[in-house]
Length: 69
Image (cartoon, rainbow, N blue to C red; front, side, top):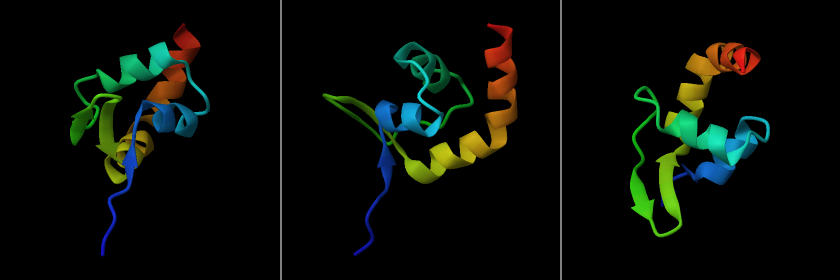
């Protein structure tokens, strides 16, 4: 049986080095961020592979935008 690997905002925050809740919200609301696969009472969840791909493509620009703040 194949298990889906999912990430919520907490996992995304940890994966991005402990960013704030506000910063995680800003990133996940971007047009280029993957669509969540579900919205639960606890919040949105994404496929981990989609989030990892997004991080790989945008990590440099994320670091640059952090420097601007």
